[in-house]
Image (cartoon, rainbow, N blue to C red; front, side, top):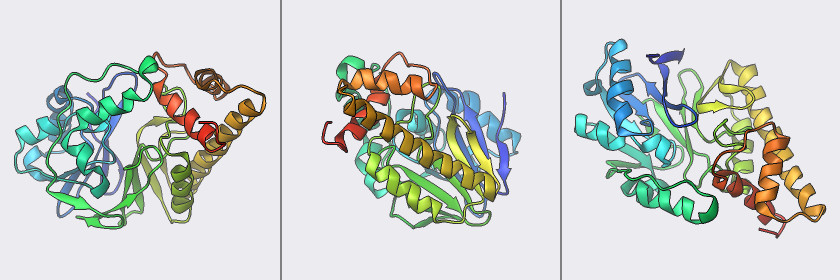
Length: 291
């Protein structure tokens, strides 16, 4: 089993197995050790996260806070098992995530309900937790600062470790999405543009993502690489919006057809269920008054 990989001082990422594409958990060490995201299911807590902590001579008793970049199943699926194994763990989430954190299964069903003919089945179980602390944009949790970075979803967040200017992004930066998605997943395209503008105005030395994103992968180490990563995200965003606008201008308004065409255009693999690309395409269509 591959354990936590040190990507910067105090910052370690673990690739946790998940359907179609691994999902990342990030460990921040300091006066209070913090685990960011929890994998996609309860089983991987015992089979993956706990042993990986052991490789660093740590256990769950050494973790003070559990927090999340957003409340999607592949990031919060291990939450309830972690709390069951370590009741002392305190949960902190962005204040806009409260309802979803309390009932992530209901939110998972809500996400799928928008495109019922193209959506994967809702998970049979996805337990949440009652947060111990709600975070506002710019507020610190231990050594790190939470930044509200919507676009992928309304409650998407990043965490900045100022000791090394390392930004833990979860799914906030999309580029061309993961292999499992087919293309970028945006639930609010306008907010994503604002997020990119905000992050590009910051001094960021390292970027640590929640998945391997196409075409540059799961991280950027160094200021130049981080800048290039952000510029690639912006270029992909501009390209995708332009592609959708071009399809509309050509008289094509069928969202599934546009989604499949976009996936082919960016070199992606069409997923079995098209609901995630449909979010992105309908967002760009909405910006033209078509969605």
